[in-house]
Length: 302
Image (cartoon, rainbow, N blue to C red; front, top):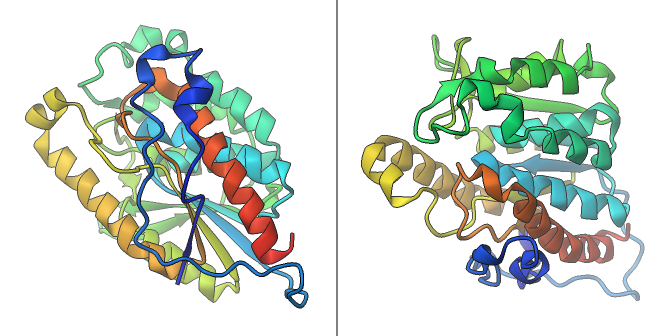
Protein backbone atom coordinates (compact mmCIF):
# COMPACT_ATOMS: atom_id res chain seq x y z
CA UNK A 1 0.00 0.00 0.00
CA UNK A 2 1.42 3.35 -0.93
CA UNK A 3 1.78 6.38 1.20
CA UNK A 4 0.81 9.66 -0.38
CA UNK A 5 3.61 12.14 0.17
CA UNK A 6 2.82 15.77 0.90
CA UNK A 7 -0.90 15.65 1.71
CA UNK A 8 -1.03 19.38 2.21
CA UNK A 9 1.24 20.81 -0.43
CA UNK A 10 2.58 24.29 0.06
CA UNK A 11 0.63 26.91 -1.87
CA UNK A 12 2.58 27.03 -5.12
CA UNK A 13 0.48 29.92 -6.30
CA UNK A 14 1.74 32.05 -3.42
CA UNK A 15 5.33 31.28 -4.35
CA UNK A 16 4.78 32.06 -8.00
CA UNK A 17 2.32 34.97 -7.66
CA UNK A 18 4.93 37.62 -8.33
CA UNK A 19 5.76 35.89 -11.60
CA UNK A 20 2.23 35.16 -12.74
CA UNK A 21 -0.64 36.91 -10.98
CA UNK A 22 -3.18 35.37 -13.30
CA UNK A 23 -2.56 31.87 -11.96
CA UNK A 24 -3.91 32.32 -8.45
CA UNK A 25 -6.43 29.60 -9.11
CA UNK A 26 -3.58 27.20 -9.85
CA UNK A 27 -2.36 26.36 -6.38
CA UNK A 28 -3.66 26.01 -2.91
CA UNK A 29 -6.18 23.27 -3.76
CA UNK A 30 -5.00 19.95 -2.44
CA UNK A 31 -5.27 16.82 -4.50
CA UNK A 32 -7.16 14.45 -2.27
CA UNK A 33 -5.47 11.09 -1.90
CA UNK A 34 -7.45 7.91 -1.67
CA UNK A 35 -4.50 6.14 -0.08
CA UNK A 36 -4.45 5.65 3.71
CA UNK A 37 -1.62 7.19 5.68
CA UNK A 38 1.25 5.09 6.96
CA UNK A 39 2.96 5.65 10.28
CA UNK A 40 6.34 7.28 9.74
CA UNK A 41 9.00 5.68 11.96
CA UNK A 42 10.26 7.96 14.72
CA UNK A 43 13.80 8.44 15.87
CA UNK A 44 13.42 5.55 18.30
CA UNK A 45 12.70 3.07 15.49
CA UNK A 46 15.39 0.49 14.69
CA UNK A 47 17.72 1.27 11.77
CA UNK A 48 16.10 0.63 8.41
CA UNK A 49 17.51 -1.63 5.75
CA UNK A 50 19.21 0.14 2.87
CA UNK A 51 16.65 0.99 0.21
CA UNK A 52 16.95 0.55 -3.52
CA UNK A 53 15.08 3.58 -4.87
CA UNK A 54 13.38 4.03 -8.24
CA UNK A 55 11.51 7.16 -9.32
CA UNK A 56 8.79 7.18 -11.97
CA UNK A 57 7.98 10.52 -13.62
CA UNK A 58 4.44 10.15 -14.90
CA UNK A 59 2.88 11.63 -18.05
CA UNK A 60 1.47 15.13 -18.24
CA UNK A 61 2.31 17.02 -21.42
CA UNK A 62 3.71 20.40 -20.40
CA UNK A 63 2.57 19.77 -16.84
CA UNK A 64 5.68 17.58 -16.77
CA UNK A 65 7.82 20.68 -16.19
CA UNK A 66 6.75 20.20 -12.55
CA UNK A 67 8.92 17.06 -12.42
CA UNK A 68 12.03 19.25 -12.51
CA UNK A 69 10.95 21.00 -9.32
CA UNK A 70 10.33 17.69 -7.55
CA UNK A 71 13.74 16.31 -8.54
CA UNK A 72 15.42 19.50 -7.38
CA UNK A 73 14.01 19.08 -3.87
CA UNK A 74 14.78 15.35 -3.72
CA UNK A 75 18.37 16.18 -4.60
CA UNK A 76 18.50 18.96 -2.04
CA UNK A 77 17.54 16.49 0.70
CA UNK A 78 19.97 13.87 -0.64
CA UNK A 79 17.24 11.36 -1.44
CA UNK A 80 19.06 8.67 -3.45
CA UNK A 81 17.74 7.77 -6.90
CA UNK A 82 19.10 4.49 -8.20
CA UNK A 83 16.91 4.37 -11.30
CA UNK A 84 14.62 6.82 -13.05
CA UNK A 85 11.80 6.14 -15.51
CA UNK A 86 9.82 8.67 -17.54
CA UNK A 87 6.48 8.26 -19.28
CA UNK A 88 5.57 10.60 -22.17
CA UNK A 89 6.98 14.08 -21.36
CA UNK A 90 8.17 12.68 -18.06
CA UNK A 91 10.72 10.87 -20.26
CA UNK A 92 12.27 14.16 -21.37
CA UNK A 93 12.81 15.35 -17.79
CA UNK A 94 14.03 11.91 -16.69
CA UNK A 95 16.44 11.62 -19.62
CA UNK A 96 17.92 15.07 -19.10
CA UNK A 97 18.49 14.29 -15.43
CA UNK A 98 19.74 10.71 -15.90
CA UNK A 99 22.55 11.68 -18.30
CA UNK A 100 24.78 13.27 -15.66
CA UNK A 101 22.65 13.29 -12.52
CA UNK A 102 22.69 17.10 -12.45
CA UNK A 103 19.22 18.58 -11.89
CA UNK A 104 20.36 22.19 -12.38
CA UNK A 105 21.72 21.30 -15.80
CA UNK A 106 18.52 19.42 -16.66
CA UNK A 107 16.33 22.36 -15.63
CA UNK A 108 18.48 24.81 -17.59
CA UNK A 109 18.14 22.67 -20.70
CA UNK A 110 14.38 22.44 -20.24
CA UNK A 111 14.14 26.22 -20.21
CA UNK A 112 15.89 26.26 -23.59
CA UNK A 113 12.59 25.05 -25.01
CA UNK A 114 11.51 28.64 -25.46
CA UNK A 115 8.89 29.81 -27.90
CA UNK A 116 11.56 31.49 -29.99
CA UNK A 117 13.44 28.21 -30.51
CA UNK A 118 10.52 26.67 -32.38
CA UNK A 119 8.89 29.81 -33.70
CA UNK A 120 9.69 28.97 -37.32
CA UNK A 121 7.59 25.82 -37.09
CA UNK A 122 4.61 27.65 -35.70
CA UNK A 123 4.34 24.92 -33.09
CA UNK A 124 3.55 27.11 -30.11
CA UNK A 125 1.37 29.37 -32.21
CA UNK A 126 -1.01 26.70 -33.50
CA UNK A 127 -1.72 25.20 -30.12
CA UNK A 128 -4.67 23.13 -31.33
CA UNK A 129 -2.79 21.55 -34.22
CA UNK A 130 -0.42 18.68 -33.51
CA UNK A 131 3.06 18.92 -34.99
CA UNK A 132 5.55 16.26 -36.01
CA UNK A 133 7.91 15.20 -33.25
CA UNK A 134 10.69 16.10 -35.68
CA UNK A 135 10.32 19.77 -34.70
CA UNK A 136 12.21 18.78 -31.54
CA UNK A 137 14.89 16.67 -33.20
CA UNK A 138 17.64 19.30 -33.04
CA UNK A 139 16.83 20.19 -29.43
CA UNK A 140 16.96 16.53 -28.43
CA UNK A 141 20.24 15.89 -30.26
CA UNK A 142 21.89 18.93 -28.70
CA UNK A 143 20.68 18.49 -25.14
CA UNK A 144 20.43 14.70 -24.87
CA UNK A 145 23.92 14.10 -26.18
CA UNK A 146 24.69 10.80 -24.47
CA UNK A 147 25.67 8.25 -27.12
CA UNK A 148 24.97 5.19 -25.00
CA UNK A 149 22.16 5.12 -22.43
CA UNK A 150 23.95 2.39 -20.50
CA UNK A 151 26.61 4.97 -19.57
CA UNK A 152 24.18 7.44 -18.00
CA UNK A 153 24.91 8.56 -14.44
CA UNK A 154 21.56 7.18 -13.31
CA UNK A 155 20.05 4.07 -14.95
CA UNK A 156 17.14 5.13 -17.16
CA UNK A 157 14.46 3.79 -19.44
CA UNK A 158 11.20 5.01 -20.91
CA UNK A 159 8.31 2.97 -22.34
CA UNK A 160 7.00 3.39 -25.87
CA UNK A 161 4.25 1.68 -27.81
CA UNK A 162 5.01 0.18 -31.24
CA UNK A 163 1.98 1.08 -33.33
CA UNK A 164 2.64 -1.57 -35.95
CA UNK A 165 2.40 -4.47 -33.51
CA UNK A 166 0.88 -2.92 -30.40
CA UNK A 167 3.80 -4.09 -28.26
CA UNK A 168 5.42 -2.31 -25.34
CA UNK A 169 9.04 -1.39 -25.99
CA UNK A 170 11.57 -0.44 -23.30
CA UNK A 171 13.72 2.36 -24.73
CA UNK A 172 16.97 1.74 -22.87
CA UNK A 173 19.74 1.28 -25.44
CA UNK A 174 21.61 3.44 -27.91
CA UNK A 175 21.29 7.20 -28.26
CA UNK A 176 19.54 8.96 -25.40
CA UNK A 177 18.02 11.49 -27.81
CA UNK A 178 16.47 8.78 -29.98
CA UNK A 179 15.13 6.82 -27.03
CA UNK A 180 13.41 9.88 -25.56
CA UNK A 181 12.05 10.90 -28.96
CA UNK A 182 10.41 7.48 -29.26
CA UNK A 183 8.70 8.02 -25.89
CA UNK A 184 7.37 11.56 -26.41
CA UNK A 185 4.80 11.51 -29.20
CA UNK A 186 1.18 11.56 -28.09
CA UNK A 187 -1.85 13.65 -29.02
CA UNK A 188 -2.55 16.50 -28.82
CA UNK A 189 1.06 17.75 -28.71
CA UNK A 190 2.98 15.64 -31.22
CA UNK A 191 2.47 13.26 -34.11
CA UNK A 192 5.03 10.46 -34.46
CA UNK A 193 7.31 9.93 -37.43
CA UNK A 194 8.62 6.55 -36.36
CA UNK A 195 6.02 3.89 -35.43
CA UNK A 196 6.53 4.69 -31.74
CA UNK A 197 4.37 6.74 -29.40
CA UNK A 198 4.40 7.28 -25.65
CA UNK A 199 3.09 4.25 -23.76
CA UNK A 200 0.65 6.25 -21.65
CA UNK A 201 -0.98 3.17 -20.13
CA UNK A 202 2.24 1.34 -19.24
CA UNK A 203 2.49 2.22 -15.55
CA UNK A 204 1.52 -1.24 -14.30
CA UNK A 205 4.17 -2.84 -16.50
CA UNK A 206 6.79 -0.32 -15.36
CA UNK A 207 6.04 -1.02 -11.70
CA UNK A 208 6.16 -4.78 -12.25
CA UNK A 209 9.55 -4.50 -13.93
CA UNK A 210 10.99 -2.35 -11.13
CA UNK A 211 9.76 -4.77 -8.48
CA UNK A 212 11.27 -7.69 -10.38
CA UNK A 213 14.58 -5.79 -10.46
CA UNK A 214 14.54 -5.55 -6.68
CA UNK A 215 13.61 -1.91 -6.10
CA UNK A 216 12.24 -1.62 -2.58
CA UNK A 217 11.17 2.04 -2.68
CA UNK A 218 9.24 3.00 -5.81
CA UNK A 219 8.26 6.67 -5.88
CA UNK A 220 5.61 7.77 -8.38
CA UNK A 221 5.43 11.47 -9.24
CA UNK A 222 1.96 12.43 -10.47
CA UNK A 223 1.62 15.80 -12.23
CA UNK A 224 -1.77 15.24 -13.87
CA UNK A 225 -3.62 16.30 -10.74
CA UNK A 226 -7.37 16.76 -10.75
CA UNK A 227 -9.52 19.25 -12.63
CA UNK A 228 -9.68 19.81 -16.39
CA UNK A 229 -6.76 18.59 -18.47
CA UNK A 230 -7.90 20.60 -21.51
CA UNK A 231 -9.59 23.92 -22.12
CA UNK A 232 -13.18 23.87 -23.34
CA UNK A 233 -12.39 24.52 -27.04
CA UNK A 234 -10.06 21.50 -27.08
CA UNK A 235 -12.70 19.34 -25.42
CA UNK A 236 -15.14 20.21 -28.19
CA UNK A 237 -12.69 19.90 -31.07
CA UNK A 238 -10.85 16.74 -30.01
CA UNK A 239 -12.94 14.85 -27.49
CA UNK A 240 -11.25 11.54 -28.43
CA UNK A 241 -7.91 12.85 -27.13
CA UNK A 242 -9.61 14.12 -23.98
CA UNK A 243 -11.02 10.63 -23.41
CA UNK A 244 -7.56 9.06 -23.79
CA UNK A 245 -5.97 11.39 -21.28
CA UNK A 246 -8.73 11.07 -18.72
CA UNK A 247 -8.54 7.29 -18.95
CA UNK A 248 -4.75 7.53 -18.57
CA UNK A 249 -5.25 9.57 -15.42
CA UNK A 250 -7.67 6.97 -14.07
CA UNK A 251 -5.13 4.22 -14.73
CA UNK A 252 -2.49 6.24 -12.89
CA UNK A 253 -4.74 6.64 -9.87
CA UNK A 254 -5.43 2.90 -9.88
CA UNK A 255 -1.70 2.11 -9.95
CA UNK A 256 -0.92 4.18 -6.86
CA UNK A 257 -1.58 1.23 -4.57
CA UNK A 258 1.26 -0.70 -6.23
CA UNK A 259 4.05 1.74 -5.36
CA UNK A 260 5.50 2.58 -1.97
CA UNK A 261 5.21 6.37 -2.23
CA UNK A 262 3.33 8.93 -4.31
CA UNK A 263 4.19 12.59 -4.77
CA UNK A 264 1.13 14.44 -6.06
CA UNK A 265 1.91 17.85 -7.54
CA UNK A 266 -0.94 20.36 -7.51
CA UNK A 267 -1.23 21.42 -11.17
CA UNK A 268 -4.92 22.24 -11.07
CA UNK A 269 -5.75 25.14 -13.37
CA UNK A 270 -3.00 24.39 -15.90
CA UNK A 271 -3.82 22.40 -19.05
CA UNK A 272 -1.44 19.85 -20.54
CA UNK A 273 -0.80 22.12 -23.56
CA UNK A 274 -0.08 25.25 -21.48
CA UNK A 275 3.57 25.86 -22.33
CA UNK A 276 3.47 29.40 -20.93
CA UNK A 277 3.07 28.09 -17.35
CA UNK A 278 6.32 26.11 -17.37
CA UNK A 279 8.08 28.22 -14.71
CA UNK A 280 5.05 28.16 -12.43
CA UNK A 281 4.90 24.39 -12.86
CA UNK A 282 8.51 24.02 -11.74
CA UNK A 283 7.63 26.11 -8.67
CA UNK A 284 4.66 23.84 -7.96
CA UNK A 285 6.95 20.82 -8.20
CA UNK A 286 9.34 22.39 -5.72
CA UNK A 287 6.50 22.99 -3.25
CA UNK A 288 5.39 19.36 -3.34
CA UNK A 289 8.92 18.00 -3.55
CA UNK A 290 10.15 19.92 -0.52
CA UNK A 291 7.61 18.37 1.85
CA UNK A 292 7.87 14.96 0.20
CA UNK A 293 11.66 14.90 0.54
CA UNK A 294 11.44 15.59 4.27
CA UNK A 295 8.93 12.78 4.77
CA UNK A 296 10.94 10.34 2.65
CA UNK A 297 14.09 11.15 4.61
CA UNK A 298 12.28 10.41 7.86
CA UNK A 299 10.53 7.30 6.61
CA UNK A 300 13.60 5.62 5.12
CA UNK A 301 16.34 7.15 7.24
CA UNK A 302 18.11 8.84 4.33
